[in-house]
Structure formats: C-alpha cells, structure tokens
Amino acid sequence: MSDSLADRLRAVDTCALSDACDALGVPGTVIGLDAHSVTKRFGGKVQTVRLGPPSPDIPKRHLCTAAVDAAAPGDVVVVENHATEIAAGWGGILSRAAAAKGLSGTIVDGPARDMDESREAGYPVFARRATSFTARGRIAELEWDVPITVGDVNVRPGDLVLADGSGVVFVPRDRAGEVVRKAEEIAAKEAGMARAVEAGRPVSEVMGGNYESMLISK
Picture 1 (cartoon, rainbow, N blue to C red):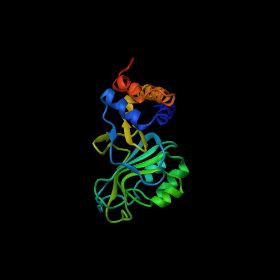
Picture 2 (cartoon, rainbow, N blue to C red):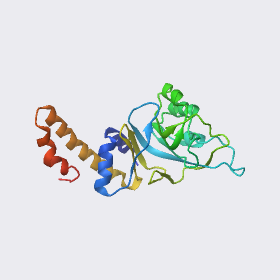
Picture 3 (cartoon, rainbow, N blue to C red):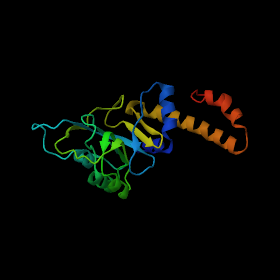
Picture 4 (tube, rainbow, N blue to C red):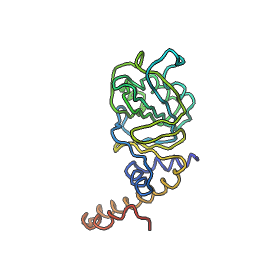
C-alpha cells in the first residue's frame, strides 16, 4: 500500500469515509472511541497489539513497546484491550516514544492513561475512557502484529484507519483504494454543497435531492 494512499485518507474526514464504507458494504466504523489528549484528525497504516489477562507464561515485555519500535512514521498503533474496564492499555512514556518516531496516533479499544502527558507530547490518543489505573498485575501483552477486534470491526496489520472528532473508521487494506476513492467523491460533493449554502442558496434546496443521492456515483 502506497504512502500516497494514506495521505489521501488523511485529506478526507471520518464522515466521508464512513459514508464510503456504507456505499461499498465495507464494515469499518466504530463508535465510542474518543479523543482524550490532542484533538486532531490523524490516520495511517495500522500496527496492532492484543492485550489480555496476565500470566506467568507471557514474556516479560512492557505492553505496546514492540509495536512502537516496529511501526514506521505515519503509522497508527491500535490496541485491543478487552480484558479490563479499568487498567490502561497505553500510557505517557509510550506516547512520547511514538511522537518521537513520528507515528500518527494511537487508538485503544479500552482504557488509556497519562492523557496530560500525551497532550504535552502533542500526541493524539483515542480510547474508550481515560483511567489512572496501571496495567501492572492487571493486563499483559499477548501478541502484536496480529488480527484484532475493535468494536465490531475485524482489524489486521496494514489496514488503514482514520480518527477525528466524529469517530474512528477502519478500512481493510484490500479495499483501501476503492474506499478512499469513494470517500473523495463524497467529500467533493459535500464541498460543493457547502459552497452553495455559503453563497446564499437555501439549505433546503441544496440538501433536498442532493443529500439523498450522496452515495450514488455518477
């Protein structure tokens, strides 16, 4: 997957991308994941981590460090943290390390902590909730660079993801080209509608027939 495709993904918003997924029958939109540090749009290729209950059989490695080390600039670390509703699947030192590497952001399906520190680092973290509970003794990293589940969406390493103030949308890597093209088409239609209302056309006229045909290619 080319870096230019990731750049094109970041140029649209999650609403256009979610609409594109709807139009093409691609499951990808996840609700309930919100910005808890820096509020800005980010996106890129996915690097995954799966967390679970601690066990003596699990190698002693701080969670998410391998994924951060392996990720390339622009990538997004996505963490499945379903084993606990209180313990953090991401923290401030990880945010500083990820920011220093030029990663785009982190998405945690579960709690994350050190949001003030992540904000100081200028690094965006989306999560189900913020927490101050440590992962120590509560969760551990089971695997990384493996398929995971976020909400009801199956996510694989190398998929694309976009996050902004409206939510989070994943795009399977094998459908990325067509989904991004569709999102660009929808965004262009919306931009034309925005220009029309700003020029004084009645919004009922602009949104009347056009809105219902937004997802239809012409």
